Image (cartoon, rainbow, N blue to C red; front, side, top):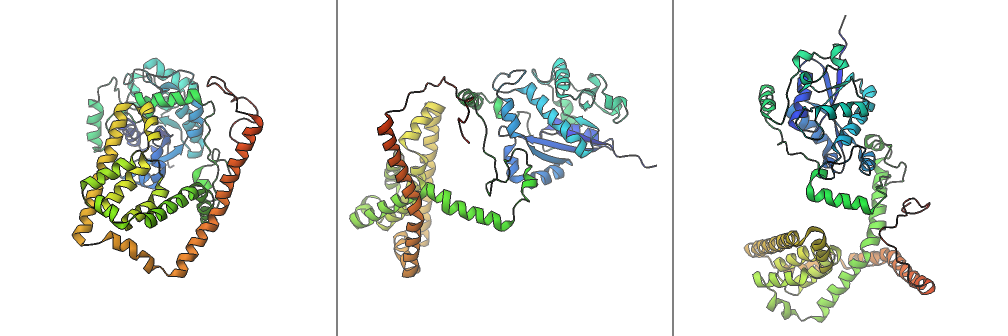
Length: 462
């Protein structure tokens, strides 16, 4: 009679300990399915390259891994974790309890008989003490089904070990913060590509965690909008992304994308785009051709001048593009125009003030210096490329209108104007209504930061 295949579900972080735990269990002929939970605070970028991550993890470590997004309940957990926080905004104990609870819910669907983690007793001062490990098992409801292969012999046998689902004699007795035993075991398994044990949760970062904590203090409602962008067919919380992917056809998604591009997106940028066109036209008509070519030709001085103009000026990328084209047409070097394109949208006096208050003076200076140096460096490179190939940017911009037929130019201009009528009318009408309302009702009352309206019915986003 064929022996039934035993399956274990492992919590996988991608670090050395969880990788070794999976391999140790798999060595006993047990099928190991690993799950990597992701939130905005750890592993969230993997959702953008899900298939690649699954493939490379299998190739590098021989582990079959699943990705599961638990953002919504994790955001709720951070409001008030039962066991408090660590040194910063890291709820390590409640995090382990929550992730184990989520993994336990997955066991029936995967046919798993027990859970596996890479925890090592005594390795972390808060979440991996012997007494804390027992609390995590108890509060997650995983008593008896949670096996920790790397330190199992330092703990009481679990029910899974007593039932013979896994051989305790083939498990280990690692303890403490010494990583040498794990590294030796990794060599035995042929694992040589693993990250340093620095941790990847930004909630344990002293700077970022402080900002997140401050955000939680000021915002009582932490509910991101995950609803379907096509037709709101689901709220995104109780619908798995893989399941939702099949809700709409390719053409429905294309239709929704085109509608967003010519609707919501154009409504946001129409004002600035038309402002940029208007300013570019004024530059072209009113400013003599030799002014810019005399003072803003190729070279470092021209780029430094553009940097001085672009950094304090408030201008978005949408408006800066036609302005840069007009400047090139008037004789500004392409490198100097690139400096304006890079520095203008990235910085302005308002954003710099916010950065100083948020990041501090030192970080703001580093940020500003990085933008300035990179902008000028790339500007010089662009000018050198144009000079090497003997290309005249001014001539190319001036000849662009000759490439496109006149009827196509007028059609495009009329289309842009027609698309802009609705968003511009909406903005103007909204501003007029706001002024009328303010004139009738007077100035709005001042509300202190300490007042909390999160429990008020019909208050907040809908």
